[in-house]
Image (tube, one colour):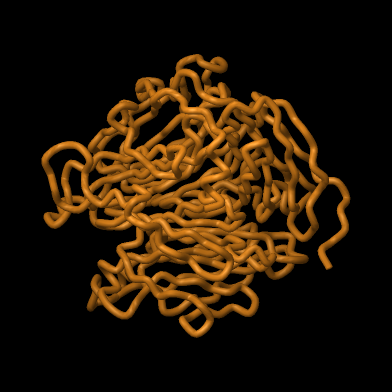
Amino acid sequence: MKWLALFLAAPVAAEPTFVDRSGGLPVAHVYSGGWEHFVGGGLAVLDCNGDARPDMLAAGGAAPARLFVNATQGPGAPLRFETGELPEMTGVTGAYPLDIDGDGPLDLVVLRVGANAILKGDGACGFTDATADLGLDPGAAWTTAFSATWEDGETLPTLAFGNYVDRSDPDGPFEACDDNALIRPDGDLYGPPVPLSPGWCALSMLISDWQRTGTPELRISNDRHYYVRGGHEEMWRLDPLEPRGTDDGWEEVSLWGMGIASADVDGNGFPDVMLTSMGDQLLQFGNGTEFVSAPYSVGTYAQRPHVGDDGRPATGWHAEFGDIDNDGRLDLFIAKGNVDQMPSNAMKDPNNLLMQGPEAVFAEASVAAGIATTARSRGAALVDFDGDGRLDLAVVNRRAPMELWQNRTPDTGHWLSVELRQAAPNTRAVGAWIERRTEAGVVAREVTVGGGHAGGQAGPVHFGLGGATRADLRVRWPGADWSAWQSVDAGQRVRLERETLPPLR
């Protein structure tokens, strides 16, 4: 396999090690609430004041959502956050950052049980409600998923909202999945929502250029617990707006879909996808025409608790790929936790930290790393909070305090952090591809908005380099061809600015 050859040159690092920094949060934040908050609990990560230190918005459910502003003193210093100012909002299930109006500072799309909202950022961690100003129909649904992209010629991004059970259906909740919605701009404002019907109780969605043809598509992961029968995972074309089916190569897989994580794990240049679920966590390898389920031997199914004596099936939520030890191989974190008191599934369900080894096999390391907690975890994020080149971890829990972990893994490999900028409207170059080249091979990463479980990140793309002290970078900017390769030193945060490039023919 190509992916084996790609990573054989990476050095073996020490076991991952994390230190509990939850005390560095200004308050013990809890995602709370009744059955409308069994799902959700997302975490949005963004730099809201331009100081190169990632900040967080944590969904609160029945409690208010909270903004945590990063006050960590520097690389390696204990992680510390302060409370930021945020319009008081309850019913929040999750949030996603993006520069929606192209003015530079990052904004937030906030998902709620009820009216969704767009919070406009001022570049100093201040936010104001701009939902009406942008003409967005906030809806009144139980929104649990989101993704966005910029389409050609538009000044605003296209927004996809995924909705869960229709709370107004008197025959619900089972077989009462609500429709999803695609909202496109109409000039400088948003037009009316276009239903994506039927809905199958979406819990995660991601717009990605899955086939690497320059035509992004919307993938939706759905919870079969409520659609019961007849539903499946979905892939929607955006232009023309239509679902793909078995007649054009889409395999209609049905699972208890909770979250989506995407990355090129096998090194073939196409996005692979991790789908969390109750029971098996499903990794599928993409090749541009289809997705092929990983063999059990890869080690990613994580279908039961890996510690304790509870042998019932696990429940996966947020999944995220990241190179924890910077050895050049992507690792995988999965947040786990019972829906609430579901007797068919494990009650003490530890989170997974699956480290990818040199033979492209993943091995559980959460116990050794110190992060195998058993709260009902939901949203999470792998992000370098202190700027030392190692990915830290934050986890939102249902009915338990939020967790914050600092990566102190010794003897890690080298690293690069790459952020993109281009002119408005799509200032963060959503839809771009970054390629990193070293002697070990080429690794491709896509800039997207969406995925995870009810939360995501807008920030630099992190690359582990293993033993390489330099790397070559190039970017396929949205709507353009590849830039030239440029060589950069390891151990730094690099900003690449888009030059004038010819459009794709």
